[in-house]
Length: 220
Image (cartoon, rainbow, N blue to C red; front, side):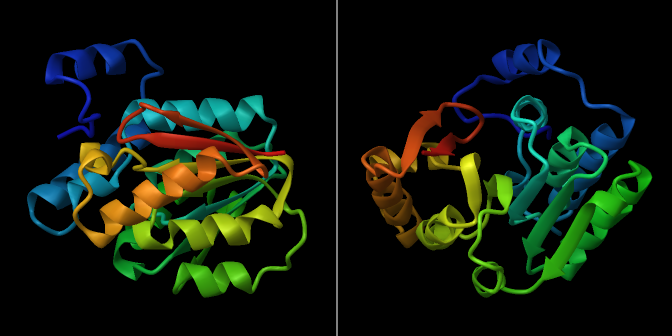
């Protein structure tokens, strides 16, 4: 039940995993526990990012020399683990999420990885929490993996809070291909967002066919 892109066959997904940075014991155990929760119906399996996406996000965090990061939508904490590991020792990651149950799993693995001192978790609705932050250039990196109808508002609020050349990552922007035949509110929200970002002069934008679609924005 390792997460994989809908664009890949199981065999090709295995090849991608084998050809990318291998999750260490802590990350592998977190992936396995989350998959077990999904198998028991305690959590949706599709909410966890794929291992190769985690490796990419860790690499990007290091490559951009990000020092302050924010995550909207934490789930069981794998993406936060990958980002936090890419930060310097004096770096920090702010996580915004509504679920105390799922983030309790995240906290255990952050502690085990020795990263708890770099990660602050705030529980509650993400948009008011984000709006409550000072509207000053603070974050070098942001990752959004939350309610799809809220993405446009999150991007708008993040803009003033990102440093020059700051990078925002938006997950699920291919939405298992449903962007080609939108039916639900989530589908239509992502289609509208993708179209708007492609022509937004404030951001340099690329939608990567990684996992379920990962949009990368650079603040101009």
